[in-house]
Length: 174
Image (cartoon, rainbow, N blue to C red; front, side, top):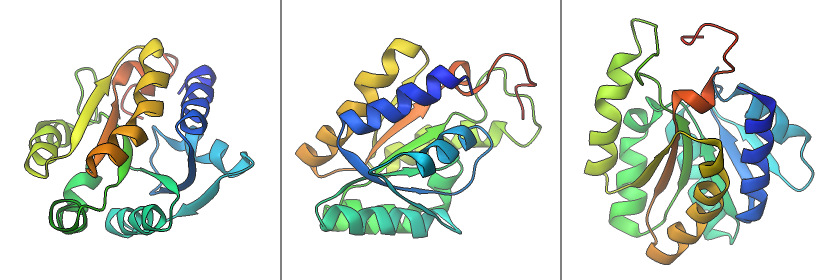
């Protein structure tokens, strides 16, 4: 991921009032994850599975903090129970940022399934989402997501397209 994309994501999280972040390590989001650890004012917690991170972000929200869960898009399938129970049943929203694995141009043989299922699962869970592909979309989408999350008490996901997740110098599937 290009350094200017990482910096724009961090600035957008700050602008949106986010101060708590959980993440399950992901190769495309690794630079953001590393950068958050160095960012003053952020509490950053690595987790062992997506459901745990979703639950921790929901707990932070209940405690009055704006939070974000960073995870691969396959994590939506892994966290279905937590997302359904928290959001649909109890109105406790979670904000997620994920890369669009399986996007057109992604090369690993395992990635198409991530792309094929992501939008359908998000829709089934009634998660509002936006796929962003251009640098100028980063800040308004990420900074605005917590406001939508709070206003509608519903989950919100920002999906970073392949154009933002790769640096243009390494293989796309990395």
